[in-house]
Length: 311
Image 1 (cartoon, rainbow, N blue to C red):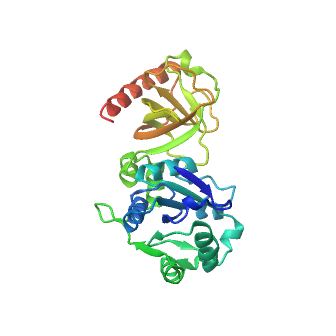
Image 2 (image 1 turned 30 degrees about the horizontal axis):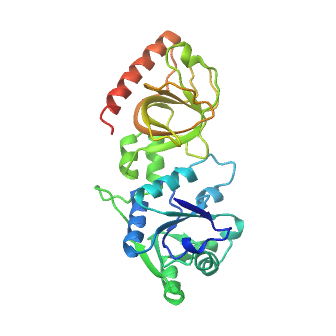
Image 3 (image 1 turned 30 degrees about the vertical axis):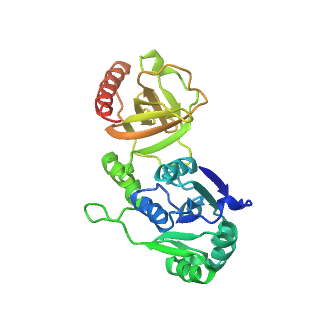
């Protein structure tokens, strides 16, 4: 996938695309419908995703608010590529963009930079100072400025409830992984760089690759069945992971500790991508290491059984 920042010069070959425009945090199935609609609206042109970075809600929340992002920029681009996007445009969202009149955003950013052939937005898309811009405004200006526009109506799940990033966040906080997967269309993924730790896992027979979450929502503390990829490699491995403060061996900053099945090698400094397939149990405090080790063994067996049917 080609990736560009709208503060830079956009090359001619990347202009004229069919653009799906929005924040697209999580790229749940409602977002996917917007990308599909953009693809269908102008199939002769490349599909591009134009996404605010950071998502506006994160910008307005402020730096001291715990992250509630569902995707890092890299994971968002990866998911967009899986759906069929060929180009990712990142629109830096800062105070100047937040205060920009909606009409100026269309002329100065969307048209001047991207020169879209077609633009597709969701029904609830809002932009510009005081969120005065919406899909109807984009549509009206598109008629004047020479690009097509499609507004995608709400997309509902099988129970008639609208897909939303809020629903994904609530399900992650509750440990409802089946719901998360249903909303996203695939298991939720986190990523981070493996760091040196206390190396206690290898002494009890369960070596782990440890990393802190970057700018992503912290899910429910507990144990998960996971699939793991070292970014840049093709192979995915099954494993079991604990996310939390490990109260048995000492409280500390929340950490992902991933025991990867059937893997040998040095992962320190590697970026791992971890898909959360099932929530096994909440984090617990054990009387001592023997009880902890026995439970980890049971967790690993349960995770392996669940993941045995995952492609």
